[in-house]
Image (tube, rainbow, N blue to C red; front, top):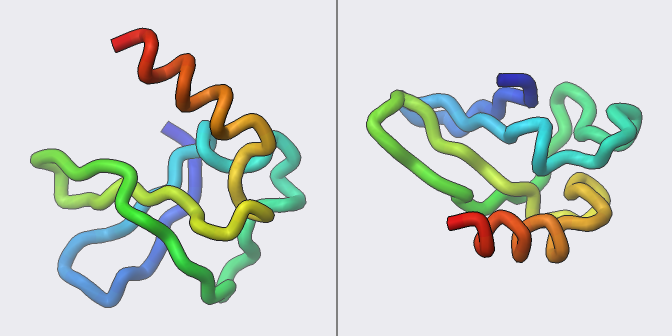
Length: 73
């Protein structure tokens, strides 16, 4: 899986999957960027999956993509 790791200052790491980020990697948060995320999901891995709150760091078609994802369940 590809994406970015986020320091949460917790015993677990945060991870933002490439599927949630803009297609243009130039728009991804740069190292040391301080921004907000929401929890996308958690499971038994020692990792919290995160979704960017700032739309500048979120894929452009997120709403449409998320609706297709929900329809697939």
